[in-house]
Length: 521
Image (cartoon, rainbow, N blue to C red; front, side):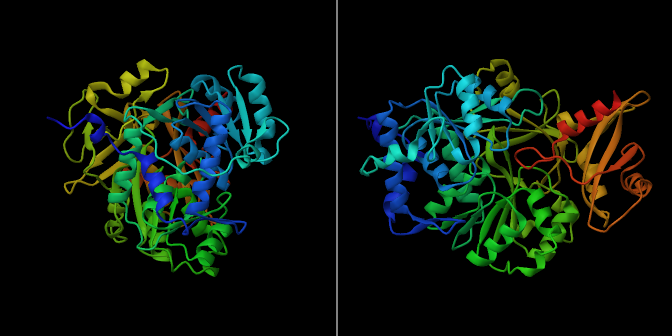
Protein backbone atom coordinates (compact mmCIF):
# COMPACT_ATOMS: atom_id res chain seq x y z
CA UNK A 1 0.00 0.00 0.00
CA UNK A 2 1.55 3.35 -1.01
CA UNK A 3 2.19 6.06 1.54
CA UNK A 4 -0.53 8.71 1.87
CA UNK A 5 0.22 11.73 -0.36
CA UNK A 6 0.43 14.10 2.62
CA UNK A 7 3.42 12.15 3.98
CA UNK A 8 5.35 13.01 0.85
CA UNK A 9 4.23 16.63 0.54
CA UNK A 10 6.97 19.04 -0.46
CA UNK A 11 8.90 21.21 1.97
CA UNK A 12 9.10 24.77 0.69
CA UNK A 13 10.65 28.07 1.74
CA UNK A 14 8.11 28.94 4.51
CA UNK A 15 9.05 25.69 6.27
CA UNK A 16 12.77 26.41 5.86
CA UNK A 17 12.29 29.92 7.26
CA UNK A 18 10.41 28.74 10.35
CA UNK A 19 12.87 25.94 11.06
CA UNK A 20 15.86 28.27 10.68
CA UNK A 21 14.39 30.86 13.07
CA UNK A 22 13.43 28.20 15.64
CA UNK A 23 16.78 26.42 15.47
CA UNK A 24 19.28 28.97 16.82
CA UNK A 25 17.32 31.65 18.64
CA UNK A 26 20.24 33.45 20.33
CA UNK A 27 22.24 34.04 17.15
CA UNK A 28 22.38 37.61 15.81
CA UNK A 29 21.01 37.54 12.27
CA UNK A 30 20.31 41.19 11.39
CA UNK A 31 22.48 44.28 11.93
CA UNK A 32 21.04 47.65 10.92
CA UNK A 33 22.95 50.80 10.05
CA UNK A 34 21.69 52.55 13.19
CA UNK A 35 23.30 49.92 15.42
CA UNK A 36 20.23 47.80 16.14
CA UNK A 37 20.84 44.05 16.26
CA UNK A 38 18.18 41.36 16.05
CA UNK A 39 18.53 37.69 16.97
CA UNK A 40 16.76 34.84 15.24
CA UNK A 41 14.51 34.45 18.27
CA UNK A 42 13.56 38.13 18.24
CA UNK A 43 12.82 37.98 14.54
CA UNK A 44 10.68 34.88 15.08
CA UNK A 45 8.68 36.63 17.82
CA UNK A 46 8.09 39.74 15.71
CA UNK A 47 6.99 37.53 12.82
CA UNK A 48 4.48 35.85 15.13
CA UNK A 49 2.98 39.17 16.22
CA UNK A 50 2.73 40.35 12.60
CA UNK A 51 0.83 37.17 11.73
CA UNK A 52 -1.57 37.75 14.61
CA UNK A 53 -2.13 41.34 13.51
CA UNK A 54 -2.97 40.09 10.01
CA UNK A 55 -5.40 37.55 11.48
CA UNK A 56 -7.05 40.26 13.59
CA UNK A 57 -7.64 42.32 10.46
CA UNK A 58 -9.06 39.37 8.55
CA UNK A 59 -6.19 39.16 6.08
CA UNK A 60 -6.42 35.61 4.75
CA UNK A 61 -4.12 33.30 2.77
CA UNK A 62 -3.93 34.29 -0.88
CA UNK A 63 -4.48 38.00 -0.19
CA UNK A 64 -2.27 40.18 -2.37
CA UNK A 65 -0.16 42.53 -0.29
CA UNK A 66 1.79 45.46 -1.73
CA UNK A 67 5.04 46.42 -0.01
CA UNK A 68 6.48 49.91 -0.47
CA UNK A 69 9.47 50.83 1.68
CA UNK A 70 13.10 51.75 1.80
CA UNK A 71 15.47 49.38 3.61
CA UNK A 72 14.53 48.85 7.25
CA UNK A 73 14.16 45.70 9.39
CA UNK A 74 10.38 45.77 9.18
CA UNK A 75 10.64 44.95 5.47
CA UNK A 76 12.10 41.56 6.36
CA UNK A 77 9.38 41.03 8.96
CA UNK A 78 6.70 41.78 6.35
CA UNK A 79 8.27 39.45 3.79
CA UNK A 80 8.60 36.66 6.33
CA UNK A 81 5.09 37.10 7.71
CA UNK A 82 3.68 37.04 4.18
CA UNK A 83 5.57 33.81 3.48
CA UNK A 84 4.44 32.02 6.64
CA UNK A 85 0.92 33.47 6.38
CA UNK A 86 0.56 32.25 2.77
CA UNK A 87 -0.03 35.76 1.48
CA UNK A 88 1.02 36.86 -2.00
CA UNK A 89 3.59 39.65 -1.64
CA UNK A 90 3.90 42.32 -4.34
CA UNK A 91 7.14 44.31 -3.91
CA UNK A 92 6.96 47.90 -5.18
CA UNK A 93 10.30 49.49 -5.96
CA UNK A 94 11.03 52.51 -3.72
CA UNK A 95 12.31 54.44 -6.75
CA UNK A 96 9.14 53.84 -8.78
CA UNK A 97 6.60 56.43 -9.87
CA UNK A 98 3.10 56.98 -8.53
CA UNK A 99 1.67 56.02 -11.94
CA UNK A 100 3.53 52.71 -11.75
CA UNK A 101 2.25 52.08 -8.23
CA UNK A 102 -1.35 52.83 -9.22
CA UNK A 103 -1.05 50.47 -12.18
CA UNK A 104 0.32 47.68 -9.96
CA UNK A 105 -2.39 48.17 -7.33
CA UNK A 106 -5.11 47.77 -9.94
CA UNK A 107 -3.46 45.07 -12.06
CA UNK A 108 -2.53 42.85 -9.12
CA UNK A 109 -5.74 43.43 -7.17
CA UNK A 110 -3.82 44.53 -4.09
CA UNK A 111 -6.04 44.61 -1.00
CA UNK A 112 -3.38 45.44 1.60
CA UNK A 113 -0.59 48.02 1.32
CA UNK A 114 2.28 47.88 3.81
CA UNK A 115 4.51 50.93 3.62
CA UNK A 116 7.21 53.06 5.20
CA UNK A 117 5.46 56.20 6.54
CA UNK A 118 8.71 58.18 6.81
CA UNK A 119 9.10 58.15 3.03
CA UNK A 120 5.79 57.16 1.45
CA UNK A 121 2.90 58.72 3.41
CA UNK A 122 1.96 60.97 0.46
CA UNK A 123 2.09 58.09 -2.01
CA UNK A 124 0.01 55.94 0.36
CA UNK A 125 -2.63 58.67 0.52
CA UNK A 126 -2.72 58.89 -3.28
CA UNK A 127 -2.95 55.11 -3.60
CA UNK A 128 -5.79 55.04 -1.10
CA UNK A 129 -7.70 57.57 -3.21
CA UNK A 130 -6.93 55.80 -6.48
CA UNK A 131 -7.50 52.16 -5.49
CA UNK A 132 -11.15 51.33 -4.69
CA UNK A 133 -10.32 47.72 -3.80
CA UNK A 134 -7.71 48.62 -1.17
CA UNK A 135 -8.93 47.42 2.25
CA UNK A 136 -5.99 48.06 4.58
CA UNK A 137 -3.12 50.55 4.71
CA UNK A 138 -0.56 49.40 7.26
CA UNK A 139 2.45 51.53 8.13
CA UNK A 140 5.76 50.70 9.79
CA UNK A 141 5.01 53.20 12.56
CA UNK A 142 2.78 56.24 13.18
CA UNK A 143 1.02 57.52 10.07
CA UNK A 144 -1.56 60.10 9.11
CA UNK A 145 -2.98 57.87 6.36
CA UNK A 146 -3.43 54.28 7.51
CA UNK A 147 -2.92 52.21 10.64
CA UNK A 148 0.28 51.61 12.57
CA UNK A 149 1.22 47.97 11.93
CA UNK A 150 3.87 48.07 14.65
CA UNK A 151 1.30 49.15 17.24
CA UNK A 152 -1.17 46.51 16.05
CA UNK A 153 1.49 43.79 16.30
CA UNK A 154 2.63 44.99 19.75
CA UNK A 155 -0.82 44.20 21.17
CA UNK A 156 -0.09 40.50 20.75
CA UNK A 157 2.21 38.21 22.71
CA UNK A 158 4.48 35.98 20.63
CA UNK A 159 3.15 32.49 19.93
CA UNK A 160 5.06 29.40 18.79
CA UNK A 161 5.83 29.65 15.10
CA UNK A 162 4.56 26.74 13.02
CA UNK A 163 5.31 26.23 9.34
CA UNK A 164 2.23 26.23 7.10
CA UNK A 165 1.36 23.50 4.64
CA UNK A 166 1.59 25.08 1.19
CA UNK A 167 1.03 23.85 -2.35
CA UNK A 168 3.80 23.86 -4.92
CA UNK A 169 1.67 25.79 -7.41
CA UNK A 170 0.54 28.56 -5.03
CA UNK A 171 1.60 32.00 -6.24
CA UNK A 172 3.61 33.47 -3.37
CA UNK A 173 4.95 36.57 -5.10
CA UNK A 174 4.17 38.92 -7.97
CA UNK A 175 7.28 40.66 -9.29
CA UNK A 176 6.75 43.44 -11.79
CA UNK A 177 9.08 43.66 -14.75
CA UNK A 178 10.81 46.93 -15.53
CA UNK A 179 8.31 47.80 -18.22
CA UNK A 180 11.02 48.48 -20.81
CA UNK A 181 8.66 47.35 -23.58
CA UNK A 182 5.44 48.96 -22.29
CA UNK A 183 3.45 48.52 -19.10
CA UNK A 184 5.19 46.31 -16.51
CA UNK A 185 4.11 42.67 -16.35
CA UNK A 186 3.38 40.85 -13.09
CA UNK A 187 5.56 37.74 -13.00
CA UNK A 188 3.92 34.95 -10.97
CA UNK A 189 6.40 33.16 -8.71
CA UNK A 190 5.14 29.94 -7.13
CA UNK A 191 6.34 28.13 -4.02
CA UNK A 192 8.03 25.61 -6.31
CA UNK A 193 9.93 28.35 -8.16
CA UNK A 194 10.95 30.02 -4.89
CA UNK A 195 12.12 26.67 -3.54
CA UNK A 196 14.30 25.97 -6.57
CA UNK A 197 15.69 29.51 -6.42
CA UNK A 198 16.81 28.80 -2.85
CA UNK A 199 18.16 25.32 -3.59
CA UNK A 200 20.23 26.53 -6.54
CA UNK A 201 21.63 29.45 -4.55
CA UNK A 202 22.57 27.11 -1.71
CA UNK A 203 24.17 24.57 -4.04
CA UNK A 204 25.81 26.67 -6.75
CA UNK A 205 26.75 30.00 -5.17
CA UNK A 206 30.17 30.24 -3.55
CA UNK A 207 29.33 31.31 -0.02
CA UNK A 208 32.05 32.16 2.52
CA UNK A 209 32.51 29.72 5.40
CA UNK A 210 31.51 32.52 7.78
CA UNK A 211 28.84 34.71 6.20
CA UNK A 212 28.59 38.37 7.13
CA UNK A 213 26.55 39.55 4.20
CA UNK A 214 26.09 43.21 3.25
CA UNK A 215 22.72 44.29 1.88
CA UNK A 216 23.00 47.57 -0.03
CA UNK A 217 20.34 46.98 -2.72
CA UNK A 218 16.61 47.44 -2.04
CA UNK A 219 15.26 44.71 0.25
CA UNK A 220 12.09 44.85 -1.80
CA UNK A 221 14.03 43.31 -4.67
CA UNK A 222 17.45 41.62 -4.97
CA UNK A 223 18.56 42.86 -1.56
CA UNK A 224 16.50 40.21 0.22
CA UNK A 225 17.62 37.30 -1.97
CA UNK A 226 20.50 36.38 0.34
CA UNK A 227 18.43 36.39 3.55
CA UNK A 228 17.34 32.75 3.69
CA UNK A 229 20.62 31.25 2.37
CA UNK A 230 22.50 33.32 4.96
CA UNK A 231 20.12 32.27 7.73
CA UNK A 232 20.34 28.59 6.81
CA UNK A 233 24.14 28.71 6.68
CA UNK A 234 24.44 30.30 10.12
CA UNK A 235 25.41 33.77 8.95
CA UNK A 236 24.19 37.31 9.55
CA UNK A 237 23.22 40.30 7.44
CA UNK A 238 24.23 43.94 7.72
CA UNK A 239 21.55 46.11 6.11
CA UNK A 240 22.19 49.62 4.81
CA UNK A 241 19.32 52.03 4.04
CA UNK A 242 20.52 52.39 0.44
CA UNK A 243 23.59 52.14 -1.74
CA UNK A 244 26.05 54.96 -1.09
CA UNK A 245 29.72 54.26 -1.92
CA UNK A 246 31.33 55.55 1.28
CA UNK A 247 28.70 53.92 3.49
CA UNK A 248 29.30 50.60 1.71
CA UNK A 249 33.08 50.86 2.04
CA UNK A 250 32.79 51.83 5.71
CA UNK A 251 30.43 48.93 6.42
CA UNK A 252 32.74 46.40 4.76
CA UNK A 253 35.63 47.57 6.91
CA UNK A 254 33.70 47.97 10.20
CA UNK A 255 31.74 44.72 10.06
CA UNK A 256 34.41 42.65 8.28
CA UNK A 257 31.90 41.85 5.57
CA UNK A 258 32.57 38.60 3.71
CA UNK A 259 29.92 38.75 0.97
CA UNK A 260 27.60 41.15 -0.84
CA UNK A 261 25.28 41.24 -3.86
CA UNK A 262 25.85 44.15 -6.24
CA UNK A 263 24.92 45.27 -9.73
CA UNK A 264 27.74 46.41 -12.06
CA UNK A 265 26.96 50.10 -11.62
CA UNK A 266 27.59 49.72 -7.88
CA UNK A 267 30.99 48.15 -8.55
CA UNK A 268 31.85 51.01 -10.92
CA UNK A 269 30.81 53.55 -8.29
CA UNK A 270 33.08 51.96 -5.68
CA UNK A 271 36.06 51.79 -8.04
CA UNK A 272 35.57 55.39 -9.12
CA UNK A 273 35.18 56.89 -5.67
CA UNK A 274 38.12 59.09 -4.60
CA UNK A 275 38.13 57.52 -1.10
CA UNK A 276 38.19 53.91 -2.30
CA UNK A 277 41.81 53.29 -1.24
CA UNK A 278 41.18 54.50 2.33
CA UNK A 279 39.26 51.38 3.36
CA UNK A 280 40.30 47.86 4.29
CA UNK A 281 38.31 45.46 2.11
CA UNK A 282 40.44 42.41 2.84
CA UNK A 283 37.60 40.56 4.59
CA UNK A 284 35.64 40.26 1.33
CA UNK A 285 35.51 36.71 0.01
CA UNK A 286 32.69 36.91 -2.53
CA UNK A 287 30.96 39.71 -4.40
CA UNK A 288 27.98 38.21 -6.18
CA UNK A 289 27.05 40.38 -9.16
CA UNK A 290 24.43 40.28 -11.89
CA UNK A 291 21.25 42.00 -13.20
CA UNK A 292 23.03 43.60 -16.17
CA UNK A 293 26.15 43.13 -18.26
CA UNK A 294 29.51 44.25 -16.92
CA UNK A 295 32.38 45.71 -18.91
CA UNK A 296 35.17 43.10 -18.99
CA UNK A 297 37.74 45.91 -18.77
CA UNK A 298 36.12 47.29 -15.62
CA UNK A 299 35.77 43.77 -14.21
CA UNK A 300 39.49 43.17 -14.74
CA UNK A 301 40.17 46.43 -12.90
CA UNK A 302 37.92 45.31 -10.05
CA UNK A 303 39.74 41.99 -9.72
CA UNK A 304 43.09 43.77 -9.67
CA UNK A 305 41.99 46.31 -7.05
CA UNK A 306 39.70 44.24 -4.82
CA UNK A 307 40.87 40.69 -5.44
CA UNK A 308 39.63 37.40 -6.99
CA UNK A 309 36.30 37.60 -5.17
CA UNK A 310 33.83 37.99 -8.03
CA UNK A 311 31.03 35.52 -8.79
CA UNK A 312 28.53 36.25 -11.55
CA UNK A 313 24.96 34.97 -11.64
CA UNK A 314 22.58 35.34 -14.56
CA UNK A 315 18.82 35.03 -14.33
CA UNK A 316 15.68 37.11 -14.63
CA UNK A 317 12.46 37.40 -12.68
CA UNK A 318 10.87 34.83 -15.00
CA UNK A 319 13.70 32.39 -14.07
CA UNK A 320 14.88 33.83 -10.76
CA UNK A 321 18.49 34.53 -9.85
CA UNK A 322 20.45 31.61 -11.28
CA UNK A 323 20.35 30.19 -14.79
CA UNK A 324 24.11 30.41 -15.34
CA UNK A 325 27.10 31.17 -13.10
CA UNK A 326 30.67 32.32 -13.69
CA UNK A 327 32.57 31.10 -10.67
CA UNK A 328 35.40 32.93 -8.93
CA UNK A 329 38.12 30.70 -10.34
CA UNK A 330 36.73 31.27 -13.84
CA UNK A 331 37.32 35.02 -13.61
CA UNK A 332 40.65 35.06 -15.45
CA UNK A 333 41.88 38.67 -15.65
CA UNK A 334 44.20 37.74 -18.53
CA UNK A 335 41.23 36.57 -20.62
CA UNK A 336 38.82 39.42 -21.43
CA UNK A 337 36.67 37.09 -23.52
CA UNK A 338 36.05 34.95 -20.44
CA UNK A 339 35.31 38.05 -18.33
CA UNK A 340 32.64 38.96 -20.91
CA UNK A 341 30.89 35.64 -20.24
CA UNK A 342 27.91 35.05 -17.94
CA UNK A 343 29.24 31.57 -17.26
CA UNK A 344 27.79 28.12 -17.82
CA UNK A 345 24.27 26.81 -17.11
CA UNK A 346 23.68 25.32 -13.69
CA UNK A 347 22.61 21.64 -13.79
CA UNK A 348 19.23 22.40 -12.22
CA UNK A 349 17.77 23.91 -15.42
CA UNK A 350 17.68 23.13 -19.13
CA UNK A 351 19.23 25.83 -21.32
CA UNK A 352 19.46 26.11 -25.11
CA UNK A 353 20.35 28.86 -27.59
CA UNK A 354 17.61 28.93 -30.22
CA UNK A 355 17.10 30.80 -33.48
CA UNK A 356 13.85 32.51 -34.49
CA UNK A 357 12.45 29.18 -35.73
CA UNK A 358 13.16 27.36 -32.47
CA UNK A 359 16.23 25.48 -33.69
CA UNK A 360 19.38 25.18 -31.61
CA UNK A 361 22.26 27.21 -33.04
CA UNK A 362 25.87 25.99 -33.38
CA UNK A 363 28.66 27.24 -31.12
CA UNK A 364 29.69 30.80 -31.95
CA UNK A 365 26.34 31.71 -33.56
CA UNK A 366 24.01 34.11 -31.71
CA UNK A 367 20.81 32.57 -30.37
CA UNK A 368 18.19 33.44 -27.78
CA UNK A 369 18.76 31.98 -24.32
CA UNK A 370 15.81 29.68 -23.66
CA UNK A 371 15.20 27.92 -20.36
CA UNK A 372 13.02 25.13 -18.98
CA UNK A 373 12.63 23.55 -15.56
CA UNK A 374 10.86 24.01 -12.20
CA UNK A 375 12.69 27.30 -11.57
CA UNK A 376 10.40 29.09 -14.02
CA UNK A 377 7.53 31.45 -13.29
CA UNK A 378 3.93 30.30 -13.69
CA UNK A 379 3.31 33.06 -16.24
CA UNK A 380 2.33 36.72 -16.46
CA UNK A 381 -0.72 37.73 -14.42
CA UNK A 382 -3.72 38.70 -16.58
CA UNK A 383 -1.66 38.38 -19.78
CA UNK A 384 -2.35 35.01 -21.43
CA UNK A 385 -1.08 36.06 -24.86
CA UNK A 386 2.23 37.34 -23.53
CA UNK A 387 2.55 34.22 -21.37
CA UNK A 388 2.02 32.03 -24.44
CA UNK A 389 4.63 34.02 -26.36
CA UNK A 390 7.14 33.71 -23.52
CA UNK A 391 6.65 29.90 -23.38
CA UNK A 392 6.51 29.35 -27.14
CA UNK A 393 7.81 25.96 -28.24
CA UNK A 394 8.06 24.58 -24.72
CA UNK A 395 10.77 26.97 -23.55
CA UNK A 396 10.90 30.23 -21.63
CA UNK A 397 12.23 32.78 -24.09
CA UNK A 398 14.38 35.17 -22.07
CA UNK A 399 14.87 37.82 -24.76
CA UNK A 400 18.64 37.67 -24.20
CA UNK A 401 20.84 36.80 -27.18
CA UNK A 402 24.07 34.92 -26.48
CA UNK A 403 26.80 32.89 -28.13
CA UNK A 404 28.33 29.73 -26.69
CA UNK A 405 32.01 28.87 -26.89
CA UNK A 406 33.37 25.29 -27.23
CA UNK A 407 33.80 25.06 -23.44
CA UNK A 408 30.11 25.78 -22.84
CA UNK A 409 30.49 29.37 -21.59
CA UNK A 410 27.78 31.78 -22.71
CA UNK A 411 28.41 35.39 -23.64
CA UNK A 412 25.34 37.61 -23.78
CA UNK A 413 25.60 39.92 -26.76
CA UNK A 414 22.41 41.83 -25.99
CA UNK A 415 18.68 41.93 -25.47
CA UNK A 416 16.79 41.10 -28.67
CA UNK A 417 14.84 44.32 -28.36
CA UNK A 418 18.04 46.38 -28.05
CA UNK A 419 19.55 45.07 -31.28
CA UNK A 420 20.14 47.85 -33.83
CA UNK A 421 19.42 47.30 -37.53
CA UNK A 422 21.53 49.78 -39.48
CA UNK A 423 21.71 49.65 -43.27
CA UNK A 424 20.34 46.10 -43.16
CA UNK A 425 23.03 44.85 -40.73
CA UNK A 426 22.47 43.74 -37.13
CA UNK A 427 24.50 45.46 -34.42
CA UNK A 428 24.47 44.27 -30.82
CA UNK A 429 25.09 47.30 -28.55
CA UNK A 430 26.85 45.23 -25.86
CA UNK A 431 29.75 44.47 -28.23
CA UNK A 432 30.22 48.17 -29.02
CA UNK A 433 29.92 49.13 -25.34
CA UNK A 434 32.66 46.68 -24.38
CA UNK A 435 35.06 48.23 -26.90
CA UNK A 436 34.25 51.77 -25.78
CA UNK A 437 34.71 50.81 -22.11
CA UNK A 438 38.16 49.43 -22.88
CA UNK A 439 39.44 52.98 -23.52
CA UNK A 440 41.27 54.27 -20.42
CA UNK A 441 39.31 57.55 -20.45
CA UNK A 442 35.89 55.86 -20.41
CA UNK A 443 34.08 55.05 -17.17
CA UNK A 444 30.92 53.65 -18.78
CA UNK A 445 29.09 53.65 -22.08
CA UNK A 446 25.66 52.88 -23.49
CA UNK A 447 24.82 52.34 -27.15
CA UNK A 448 21.39 52.75 -28.73
CA UNK A 449 19.86 53.02 -32.18
CA UNK A 450 18.40 56.35 -33.26
CA UNK A 451 16.23 57.06 -36.28
CA UNK A 452 18.22 57.94 -39.39
CA UNK A 453 16.95 58.72 -42.89
CA UNK A 454 19.87 57.02 -44.62
CA UNK A 455 20.53 54.00 -42.40
CA UNK A 456 17.09 53.40 -40.87
CA UNK A 457 18.82 53.31 -37.51
CA UNK A 458 22.18 54.86 -36.68
CA UNK A 459 24.47 53.63 -33.93
CA UNK A 460 24.76 56.29 -31.20
CA UNK A 461 27.07 56.04 -28.21
CA UNK A 462 26.68 57.95 -24.96
CA UNK A 463 29.80 57.97 -22.83
CA UNK A 464 30.68 58.89 -19.25
CA UNK A 465 34.34 59.80 -18.81
CA UNK A 466 36.51 59.01 -15.83
CA UNK A 467 37.35 61.97 -13.57
CA UNK A 468 39.78 64.43 -15.19
CA UNK A 469 39.94 62.34 -18.38
CA UNK A 470 39.26 63.43 -21.93
CA UNK A 471 39.04 61.81 -25.35
CA UNK A 472 37.74 62.98 -28.71
CA UNK A 473 34.60 61.41 -30.12
CA UNK A 474 36.43 60.54 -33.33
CA UNK A 475 39.05 58.59 -31.38
CA UNK A 476 36.35 56.40 -29.84
CA UNK A 477 34.64 55.93 -33.20
CA UNK A 478 37.96 54.90 -34.72
CA UNK A 479 38.59 52.47 -31.87
CA UNK A 480 35.30 50.67 -32.53
CA UNK A 481 35.92 50.72 -36.29
CA UNK A 482 39.32 49.12 -35.73
CA UNK A 483 38.07 46.45 -33.29
CA UNK A 484 34.62 45.64 -34.73
CA UNK A 485 34.39 47.14 -38.23
CA UNK A 486 32.67 50.08 -39.89
CA UNK A 487 29.11 48.79 -39.47
CA UNK A 488 29.37 48.75 -35.66
CA UNK A 489 31.25 52.04 -35.38
CA UNK A 490 29.01 54.75 -33.85
CA UNK A 491 27.85 57.46 -36.20
CA UNK A 492 27.97 59.85 -33.24
CA UNK A 493 29.19 59.99 -29.64
CA UNK A 494 27.71 62.16 -26.90
CA UNK A 495 29.49 62.78 -23.59
CA UNK A 496 27.19 62.96 -20.56
CA UNK A 497 27.62 63.17 -16.78
CA UNK A 498 25.75 59.95 -16.01
CA UNK A 499 23.81 57.24 -17.79
CA UNK A 500 20.18 57.06 -16.61
CA UNK A 501 19.48 53.96 -14.55
CA UNK A 502 16.34 51.96 -13.95
CA UNK A 503 15.11 51.32 -10.43
CA UNK A 504 17.15 48.09 -10.44
CA UNK A 505 20.39 49.90 -11.29
CA UNK A 506 20.48 48.86 -14.94
CA UNK A 507 21.24 51.33 -17.76
CA UNK A 508 17.83 52.63 -18.82
CA UNK A 509 17.99 52.48 -22.61
CA UNK A 510 14.28 53.16 -22.90
CA UNK A 511 14.90 56.56 -21.27
CA UNK A 512 17.90 57.20 -23.52
CA UNK A 513 15.96 56.36 -26.68
CA UNK A 514 13.09 58.60 -25.55
CA UNK A 515 15.52 61.46 -24.90
CA UNK A 516 16.93 61.32 -28.41
CA UNK A 517 13.51 60.78 -29.97
CA UNK A 518 12.33 64.02 -28.34
CA UNK A 519 15.47 65.80 -29.50
CA UNK A 520 14.77 64.62 -33.06
CA UNK A 521 11.31 66.19 -32.99
